[in-house]
Length: 354
Image (cartoon, rainbow, N blue to C red):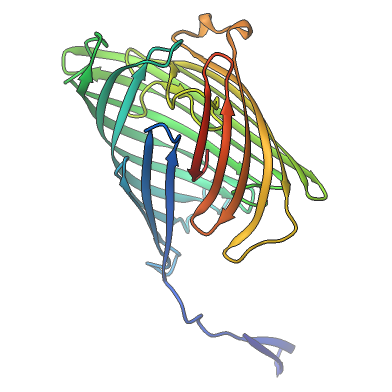
């Protein structure tokens, strides 16, 4: 970009001369999720993101995400800023999106962690949103969503209910708000992030009549630092009133920094409460290809219940972890030790966000 001053009829005018940047309008990013507990439970997902900017002169974007591995997933969104003024604001957009996913679900005995069943869930989802960006703060969306999913058994040792081999669907209205002021997505050192989502509608299965459902999800993260020392606080409250689960399944807890020491997904239910306090120290030397190395630990508490009326502070499960971490180009990397008094002690190698 260059500039100069020109003499014009209206007086001295500052004129900018700009050239298009030599890269784009297609942008790609590669990520990796990998975890093992060194006891035979391992998984990986390779993630590829693609953004196509300026499909139209109004700034239309095409956003794509592809995951290959344990949880194959494809997500595509067409995001279009509106030029019409709605109410007192001009910053509005519409978004149409779709998602396809296949997930493996393991069901455990909550107390012992013994495996009871292995299920496969195939799901698809469509959505249409009207939203407003809040500058660098975040955005709010209101829209319609439709989901369909099917659960098939792969391994059963107990009766897990009558929901298997049925095709389920739900249609609802969704309101979602995201406020993100964290300075970094991984190992943030200051700022906060808040995500609130509410959805309500009708749900039905192959042999089940339509019934009303609703879900409310609230997540918050806050980070603050003194020098190289950082305290990161995270809380999550999830509540579902529904005849069966959804494409996301019942809410689950377990795994690294999600009650470390428990099996991933060992605790599940329609009501979930979880809190975590994490401390980490950023080391002075930052190796090549990383933002830095960190050492730290976490204290965790939470549980999941079938019904909201069953939720109680006295039922909370507790866990802790100690880790060495690095913020790499593929995502955060952890080598950690997790322990839960009612779960167990587990060593983790983890790439990705807990």
